[in-house]
Length: 234
Image (tube, rainbow, N blue to C red):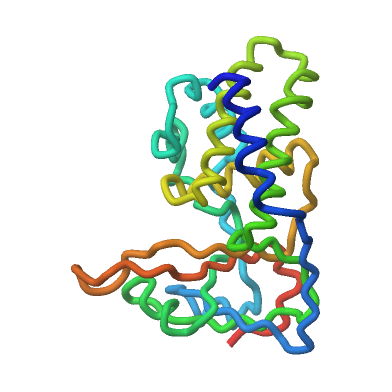
């Protein structure tokens, strides 16, 4: 993608979205989340939820940088790296939840719904909010235009630019063609110290759950990053 494309993109699209608002939620009530699991009794007996971090985002990023020049559309972003134990979690490492019992119940077969009570005070990245999407795009552009030039390895700069520009398109298209881009973007922004780690991240995605032939509906997914603010499990 040319620098002219990025210039036009900034003028025509980013300025439409307005000024970012960072959310620190103070609801006065416990946040209640619903997590689908096949080991509910074990979690409750241990009173602990463990985040699966077997997918190595550092290796994933390194792989993406070597193949980014082949990718022209978000749908072409690969979802793993050679030797990975699993596909990339689409929003990154954390505890994946729904905001209602029914969606969690339908998530997978032979599972139970774990109810999570979460602190009423928490930081939230709301990826359904266009203001926050705008902020992500601006931070990615800042990396492309400033931070990449400071990298010591000149050979990696073109790979970085190709990947960052493609991720900007992912955000602009609201992740519809590449859900795993959410996790990649958050990892990169943390890597370049553009954001602090939030307590929770949420985003609505189209799910194909239930009887075949049902129409697709967007379901809100909530990713718990900070398990220290969990106040109860049942």
